[in-house]
Image 1 (cartoon, helix red, strand yellow):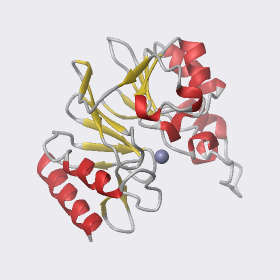
Image 2: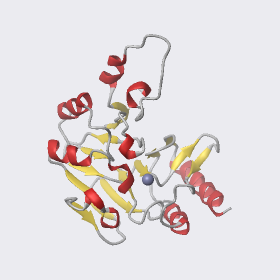
Image 3: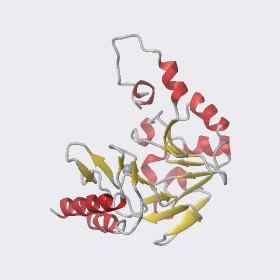
Image 4: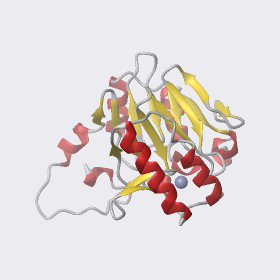
Length: 229
Ligand SMILES: [Zn+2]
């Protein structure tokens, strides 16, 4: 799956590996009806994207590569109703997904420069926005001005480039290096998540993380301390 998902095709292998098996395995189920798409795109800086299968209309979170095999699989899973973009960086092939699936692109208005100016559902103000009863969108300015995170079923938090698990630190972390808008705002946007009930962090970059609510809260507090340090 790494071979077919690497945006730059940089993963090599000495053994003969049948990548067709990997292609067929994507999107890869994570838990419940949440999938990891794989097929990262250079145009999203290699960000990870996710798919949610819902009776009320499927959701794509950020943009994978518009790869034929993935597109066919998403079609078989019922297509895409909403394409929710956490922020302006991880949008890759959004126009092709829009044209193919007729999905509504949701992104904060502060991040709708360039090709995103025609997004069907620009979000305005500070939110939160309840897109559907099970999808809550939370403004998390910091990495960019209009960054949002997506809370699904009070369980899964899709964090884009706001927050991720960093192996080297052994904790939740953020990236100061890639902070584009405001570091102070980003600290506040981590604090804002303390009272949200999620038990999964599914990021654009870095590792995913699962923990009970109490542990998650503790990890957020630790991450904030590191940010302030
Ligand atoms: Zn970004």
